[in-house]
Length: 343
Ligand code: PBG
Image (cartoon, rainbow, N blue to C red; front, side, top):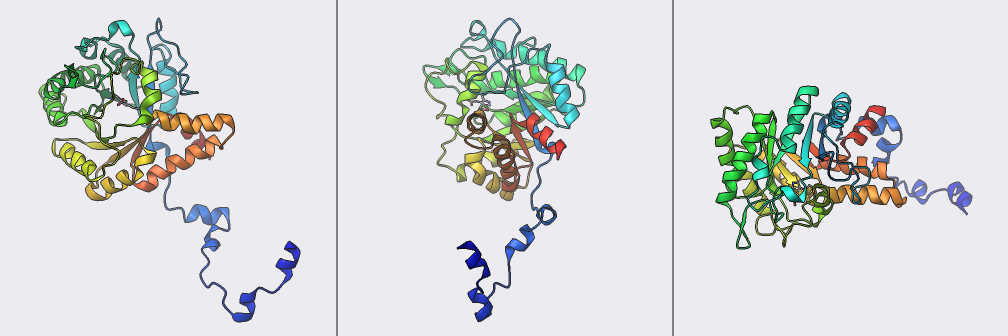
């Protein structure tokens, strides 16, 4: 049947109605496809989030994030060194904190010798070329699992900002280059900027988690840092509703006004429209966070053989670039960088 169809004169040959414009022409060869590519993903677009653990505590494996391990301080220089060698611009450090160290007042968050600060000092000393990013939020240290201080079941805004400012300064003192407030309290960017400046850290930059949504996709992350069990309720009183897009623009506008150097949208894939709107509206450095649940879905389905995990990873990352992201926090950073290097 096929041979007959191919051999027969197409109707268009008779009527003269061939398509004049054939978009398939540019798709014919590998070289044309490469030449007309509108978007490129490069290693400079990748930020690698790394989970930390104390060697005496916590397993390395994270069941909901196959392929991601919590690293000890001893393992950190090699792993981060490899990322630097691949050309990854920055790492973001997230601690697993043992139950005993979590309190309702979150003292551990402002201890200059906590796991994050020790990790920052270690990376800065041993892999000086790579950028170091720290999350500013209380959840890893909070017995109640929230990003801010909780009183009578309410997450307090202004009281939380005070301790978040101290946390940012402690991280900057340890040598962190960029602080990333992920707490979503109102007005925290301006206060953190002022605190950093007063402490002599005017060169430490701020990447605001500006539009951070209350999302089901953070589940595996909460397992990774051990905050999931602690969390009472949800984070809907401070993280944004997935229904809102105009509100994201207001959040970004405020954070920029208060001194944010970069803004971030989070999660990633379900919010590509927000990335596009933010980039087009503000034309500022706009980052995306491909979060733990997105990683788990792609990696999990890949391991099952339901999709080609590597191809899906690269396609998802390219999608962020096409949407307008300047950089992407991704647990795939090292794997993607290796693929990009291999060509
Ligand atoms: C905590 C924080 C979260 C993530 C980054 N910082 C989780 C949350 O808000 O509950 C999520 C990252 C991920 O899921 O990969 N403030």
